[in-house]
Amino acid sequence: MTWANTTLTDFEAAVKSSDPTPGGGTVAAVALGQAAALLSMVADLTLSSDRWSDAHQAAHDAKAAAAAVMPRASHLADADAHAFDAVVEAFKLPKSTEEEKEARRHEIRAATLGAAEVPFETAEQACGLLPHVLAMAERGNSNAASDAGVASLMATAAAKGAVFNVLINLNALPESMGGSMRAALPKMEEDIRNLGRACMDAVRSRL
Image 1 (cartoon, rainbow, N blue to C red):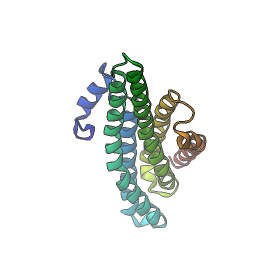
Image 2 (cartoon, helix red, strand yellow):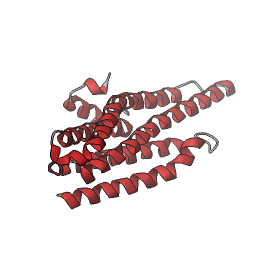
Image 3 (cartoon, rainbow, N blue to C red):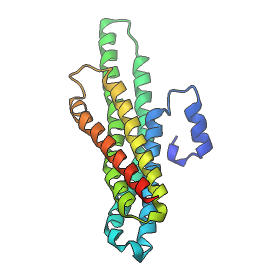
Image 4 (cartoon, rainbow, N blue to C red):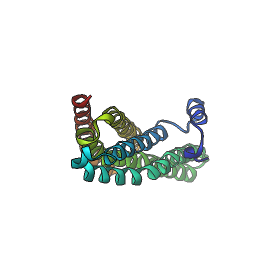
């Protein structure tokens, strides 16, 4: 199953089902892809008019960033579901002997770490996209200011939602695991808040 190739109706049906995947991490990655698509649209609308020539370079940069993020977001949507499926399978391993218990514990932790790493990349990708959304919100075609606003909301939702999924998995692991992610999260969350707020302020000033 590749979520990028399903209809919106089928995807929503899969999300609302009782199956554990796709869940919030996949939805966050899908939101990231939608943010990138909207950003690309705003960039194109900016590039299509000489009125916004001062923002053309920023629009080129935004369009390039969006083009890189969209396929990665599709990959992350699938990868998130696969990562959590691996956690579920690890919990099903036998635990009759001490050796089996130890092997099961090791597999659960390895799979849980993987389930943190995927949304962490989703959050990283969203954080990388947000400065371009801000540039378009501030300087892009003002007729698309509302679209830039939705792009910023989708990007921040992707980032914040992904961080939730990182945290719930890291909190299930020993402190010794996921150290680089634990260290990066505070600044990442601060950047998400600041960029999201700046985008909203820019959009409101141009509506």
